[in-house]
Image 1 (cartoon, one colour):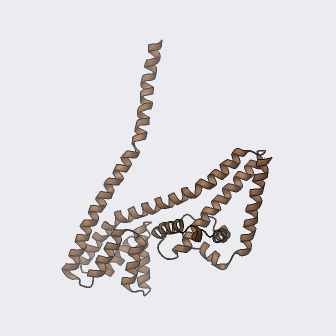
Image 2 (image 1 turned 45 degrees about the vertical axis):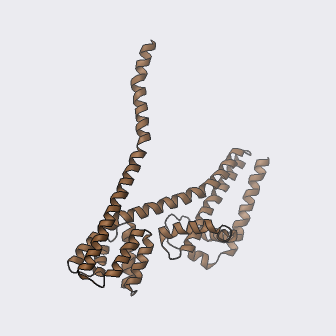
Image 3 (image 1 turned 120 degrees about the vertical axis):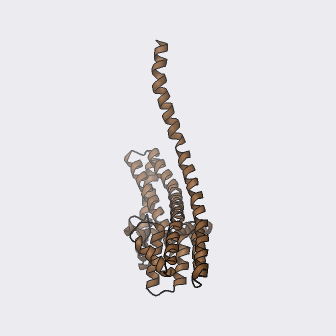
Length: 292
């Protein structure tokens, strides 16, 4: 009875919060919920969750946590609307937490006051936010590694095109056109940069924003090198790009070695498991024969 009563109280409290959020929704919440961001589900319910996140005042009460989360969002989604996207990500986390709490409470009531179901719901509700934050950090790291691996290839194409007589702007646009439609973070940012430049924004401004959105130091070095030398043109510019290309290729090789070591270390456990299975298959019948 005690567990059933506790589950019922939790459901009533959650229902009260949701009813309060329904009356507090504003067009600003709907605008934030419509922002493009990977991994966001059930956008129709996000305005309610955003109201609850605002009421909880997480940014004011836990500024260090909020800024670390915002930094990960910036590295994955860019600087524009980063605070709003961070709020949206926290709203997604809160949605999953509420869903798990409702699931645990309903299962506890349905199973005649089962404390196990209530504990499972509460435990998952506590663990899931940390899992989502870790998953976000992992996706950001994978994105940065993809950019770092592809950047030397793109730089080589730019060097060849500039050497053939094109300006650096024309070379960058041609690289973007050749990879148009490819689902790669570097070329997505390149497409966005070329679109902003064609719309009338200054080249140096959109190129700087491109380097910041990529989120890796090597991209910032590439941007700085191009902006410092592209007006000079001639041999000095080509030489600066070649020097940068050699540096990026060395970093790519280093990253490739690290990824290879990680892949080989992941194979250790399956290989040990296979060895144990083979030993059991070979040694089991032999031991049975010896005992007979």
